[in-house]
Image: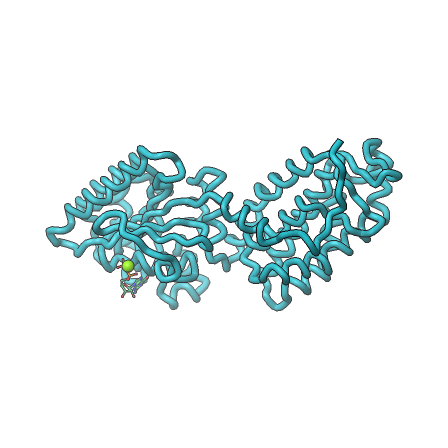
Length: 380
Ligand SMILES: Nc1nc2c(ncn2[C@@H]2O[C@H](COP(=O)(O)OP(=O)(O)O)[C@@H](O)[C@H]2O)c(=O)[nH]1
Ligand SMILES: [Mg+2]
């Protein structure tokens, strides 16, 4: 049997682990299409909270389409230059875009275009035959969201007319009305007419599970609906680590020292912090984990819960300080959910820092999730 070396957080190479994680995250490829001035850049800036075309390095992949990617950005963005409405370039643009997407779809999945956001300026009050033809073709190749942009400039009848023009081109659920006008964004009543949250939810659902995390990481989540979606989707990250904790089996759990973490749970914690965009360098993360999470897990496990775990799971052998796979999975699950909940609370209300929240809430959340877990919950 493999000899177990006690885990040491101080010597744990967080950076190496982060690089490995970063390399593993698959990135969704998103193409932004539509006429010049339709609002493509404004959409990107609003959804991602920053101008990704400025942050990332851009490289032309065709005459008019640029690819923007960076190690620190979890999506790859393709921005097409667009065309002046009515210009001769219009048809050339359509040919270029569909040619690019159709070619991409012949490649391996990682290189395909996973999503298109097609912007139509609602204030133009029409959908051109070229838009219709191009959207139809794109929709046969991949998932296309049609964004009716700048809706602050039109009335409801005009919007309805535009939607009707799209009715035979894309499903109704794939049409989104948006605007970045402050007077709409900041008015609760008017905001209800905007589909920003629905656009993100729909887009996430179009993606393969392995690609969803990248999009959710980059989305600038502010609203409760968006943050809840992010919280829910984190379950997939957590279950990956729960599975590896299970297969690692016979995880040494020196709970007496209150160091109930193994590399699996530390990596999961870091992964979740990154997913939620917690801005902290490696040393800060180590300190956070070491000073806030570990002692609380230790305390929780050493009181009632662990006794119950021991009692009901014969595989958990207190004398040997070794815990069986089922119990290791349960603990990992509870740590993951507790960190996820803390990060969600931090995003909902930034009046407390992540460190304060970890100190005040993590322990009770951990116990609560241990109780809820079908594996580790106490039996009456
Ligand atoms: N009123 C209004 N103007 C917008 C909106 N979105 C973009 N614009 C304006 O439309 C112009 C073109 O927007 P931009 O995002 O650069 O379009 P792009 O050329 O497709 O990237 C800019 O002057 C924007 O300020 C919107 O929702 N409402
Ligand atoms: Mg632009």
